Length: 183
Image 1 (tube, rainbow, N blue to C red):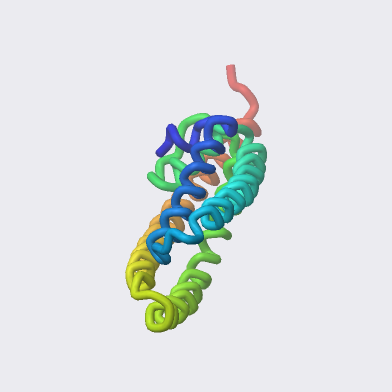
Image 2: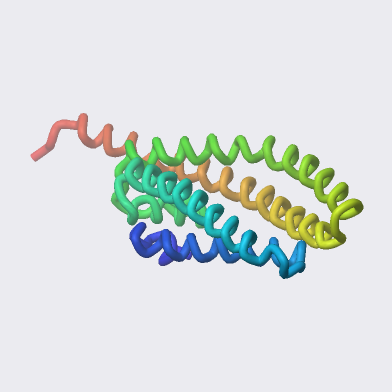
């Protein structure tokens, strides 16, 4: 996953385009298998893939620029996942990015349960009125949300550990810088 996150945008965006467009097309094909609207489904998949790739491209580029480059952004994501702070980090950038990431994960604690309730209601309605395929979508969505709750708790715990380590390193460096050199 780290290699995927470290890809340059000209390599990452075509992969994202194919994945998003292909997934949208496949879900549409499985949920409504009639072959009559195949061209319309392909066109809507193309439009959806272009829009989502554009949106995610801007979002990824913004986050990478803000973090100081692709490698730093990938290192921050790796640190959030593992809880290990690499040596020789830019304290200002890392603290800003970790606090921003913490805010996003804290929002997940409230938004994910709301999304589960709303999407479960939509899926149950769709499964009873449109197609039983929606039961499968509901199960997959609940699984993804359960993983998201677990990931949020782990990430918040790791972010707190990383911020504590950054503060500890920062105070040691400030103390050492304020001490006059002894000879």
